[in-house]
Image 1 (cartoon, rainbow, N blue to C red):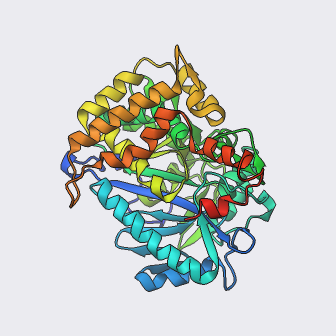
Image 2: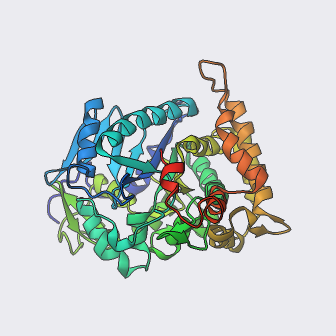
Length: 454
């Protein structure tokens, strides 16, 4: 074998290093933090169309305008494709969706302050450019072929590969938006319990945040069409991971899963080399067709893990991935929900007790049915709405036990108010949109761009 690659980090000469990658992220409770990620659609105020990268009104100009707030540009092939500042990043999804990947923070109060400061900045620049921003799970108007593509090499590779694995992968890339939270874990056993709870309860999060009922100007028959799209994107790298609930689950088992997910690319000297469909196991053996003779580095492993998209993703933190994008006032609710469930021992144990005896078939059925029926989905002798009430109660107790207070002495439980109301009424955000569509909006989705714009 030739010299190791230059992607970054030590060369992988022993499979054990893949497991140590996850082990190295274990943290004591006092160091647990959370990072919020949220995407939003950018649109032109005059015609509601998606915004291309180029031009005076383009996404490139948007990123340039944000630099006056202290953001530093990250470039690829002469284009600014991301911004960085103090542990935060602003990044671009394939169709120009703007994402804030927040700094890892200790409390929901801090995360919400971060969100509000980001809102202030992006609204200022958007107003100057004649642009607006919208929080939904799926863009309400515009065909797939009308959407722009951002100038990022990894997206060119994914664009070619996605249609080989599913019919809706390009829609996932171009027309969906989500809100996610990243959580730390203490040790291997703690990771396993959190991962199991996260996977089992992800359909409940999907239902509570369901917010994508429109496609190309009409109701699409779903409450979370974004969630439905993931069922026909790429079965190799998405789904509910039933093997996580089997005996013997741990870092090694997840590493084995990741090794068997086909690759997208390898990065060398800032260039993305197409390795789509190739095997990381072959890479370990120096037999990757895209880079014959080379062995991977830990940086390559880290890159590969970012191309895996299950309902809960494990990296050096755990990423909860089930929620639709939404209005600004609801963005803080998602990190509050999962921190409440996972960052207090009693709450985590209560959540695990709730789901412990669910079967693989029951979890999958929830995953399959929730995009269409959300909180009305039947489960055993009840409905998902009743379970959602229990879950919100557990999260509330967990946040109360955390006792993280702001300057006014308020704990974090208030951030759950919005989803507590959704659970209590059974009326999801998507159903509110549909009521407006069939009522005061007179079967037009155009008002969503004013009534629900940031």
